[in-house]
Image (tube, rainbow, N blue to C red; front, side):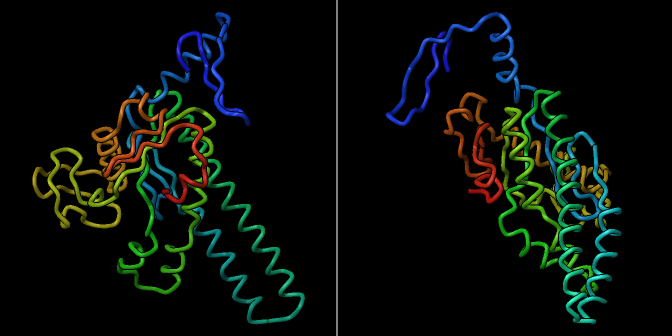
Length: 260
């Protein structure tokens, strides 16, 4: 769309039309144009905290872990019973857990998109292709914990973020996740030892300390901001970069969720 004209796709090809909006319509059109000009909100996805953004807002996974542990114990008992009644109850439990999971992801994604919209920021997420392989290589002492870490619906959360962001006209940027957990967001020093524990980050170079997920979210935002194209480039779909992929509003949520 340009001043006074709009381009539309039709079944017979592209059509260019005159656009004659009133004052109210011009104001509404101006608001989406500002989205993404306020910077980038980085989002780090994890297990202890399902999501942490670069402004420090976090969504704890503690309640989720408790609920899922409860369902896992019930499933184990019913699977051991093996009766027809037990199988019916297993199906009901599966549906309940799916609804719980979908509701949690809905609330997280809605809050993040509202925050990004209010601040006129783009959203930046790690490109999560291969996350199961990356998480699976980390040292996890118990089989139950391994199952928990690998099974949360990050795909679903990311899909909901994409869907809501597209609906709100919020640009979404996918960045290379390499070393976001090891790099100091204050001085840039990168070292494995900077990550003291799952939750703690302390830079061996400058001494800067922060919650590890928050530090990673800031690095995601920095990486996206450093490599992002202008908002107008994202809207034309010409913003594919080696480190940062710009995804225009209106992109298929499933296409974004699979990182294609």
